[in-house]
Image (cartoon, rainbow, N blue to C red):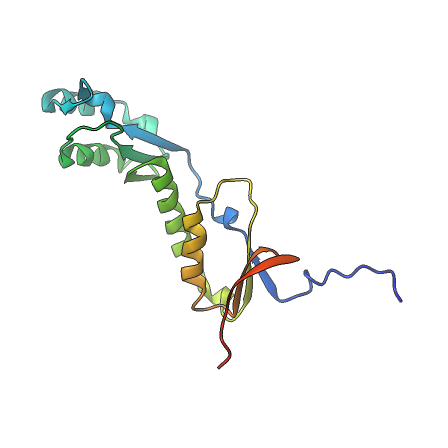
Length: 170
């Protein structure tokens, strides 16, 4: 018997997919409109328009921005639209919502660009550990995208996986 160690995982046809490689670049920031509300309750249009005109929008250059209002106030939709109009030519990406919702959208966009041809009829293991926080929604989205094309889908590491999906035999 040989003492040579053979890495059967490396020699297998299993494709390891690490969602961290899809981690969207760019700083994530929140733009909270509450700071533009009078007593954090109402929006004064004249004051708000003055702020929009004078604010240094370059601070958001190439950042991913979540526009929100963290207080219970009635804010007209056009106010969020004005902010978005200033951020659109500067920011990397903008959305309405929380930082968590921003993260979900960024991953959704990244996963929708996935080249499915490389996963056709493949055995795929979705890596479970990463240095960055990957939203659970990204794993769910990945299943929805890959399940129609892969032969099997697993979670974990190639040497220790949890089966998620296996295409039924015809």
